[in-house]
Structures are given as structure tokens and as C-alpha cells.
Image 1 (cartoon, helix red, strand yellow):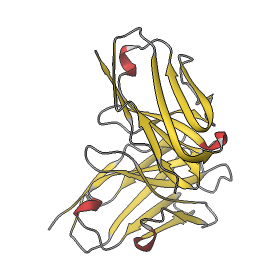
Image 2 (tube, chains in turn purple, blue):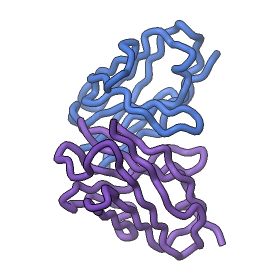
Image 3 (tube, rainbow over the protein chains, first blue to last red):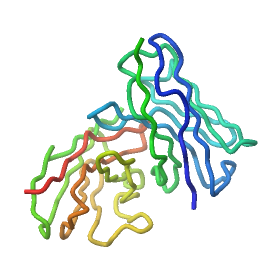
Image 4 (tube, one colour):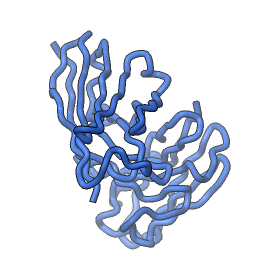
Length: 118
Length: 107
């Protein structure tokens, strides 16, 4: 059974870079069956797709965040990562990683809260 | 970018009643690329429906999806206590976007 777990700092200062890692267990991140994605949810609000990556390294980003986002994959560690630069309070959210199959996000991590504050 | 609009914003129903949730797209969406998710407080979203009408693994058959083009519907035939939650639709075609959600709460 595929499982995903987010990790990273829960507090980031304004203008700095948010960095999160998603560790995949119960399956290989190099599987051709999956893409891997990041989604976020500000407190009390809806879901926003940040971007996705394939094990080969091909990436797809939300146009509204593209200039600040980098998603990468480390197949040796079965992990993929998110970097979001120049963060502001508007980037405060629960960040989820998820696997993409059947043209939908089928398995989600539990989410990690990231607060942007000095 | 395709904008998804969900209605109603809140649906107040009793257990055992039928719930009908709407998702409307600003442009036509391929049915293959329309999904529905359920989210309960403090939990990650859970995939219910993909491809507009296919139930995800382990999803009870009281959940059904339908629609095409710009109009899609999620139906819960008889609400169980555990179904009271927020429901999001999502499209993948022109970029990837989620609707704002419909909250189904207990009347």
C-alpha cells in the first residue's frame, strides 16, 4: 500500500525559501504508473495545486506560482521535494504531497502545516 | 485557466437523504479529467471519483459521478453520518484546478 509523508520546517521567515520533502513508502517513486504532486490549503480555504513531477524529472507547475516553485525528485531516496522561494504570509498553508494516477490524486500524505512569520 | 464553480456552497441535509452537488467549468473539460474529493476536518482529501464517473478503490456505491462538457454532478444516494464533509471537484486539462468546495452538513 503506497504511503506518503511530508517533512520539513513548520515555520519559515518572510522572503526566505520554503523547503519540504515527501517520502514515498510501499512503492517505487520510479514507477511509470505515477506522477507526484504538491497541493496546499491555506487555513479555512480550498485546495491549490502547486505542481507535479514524473520520476524522469519532467515537471509541471501552476502558472500562478511557477516563478517561485521548484519540484525535484531523488529516486535513490524514494523522495520528491518542493522549494517555494520569496515566501510571504499568503504562503501559510497545510502542504500536501500526493500521488497522481487515473488522472487524479489518489493517495495523499497527511499534510504538514507551514507558517510564514518573522 | 479553467475555473470551476461548485454549488451550493453549503448543503444542509439529514442522514438518509440524497445529496446532489454541482461542479460547473468555465470551459469544456474532458470527462477523463474530472475528479471529486471528500475532505473531513483535520484530514487530507480522499479521492472519491475519477474520470467523472469511476469510483476510486474502496468507495461505497452510494457515491456516483456524472456529467460531461461543463456540467458535472456528484450524487450521494443516501447520506451516512460519515459523509458529512466538504467535497471538491478538480479538473486536469488546462492546467489543474480545484473548485471552491461544497460543505455538506447535518440539518
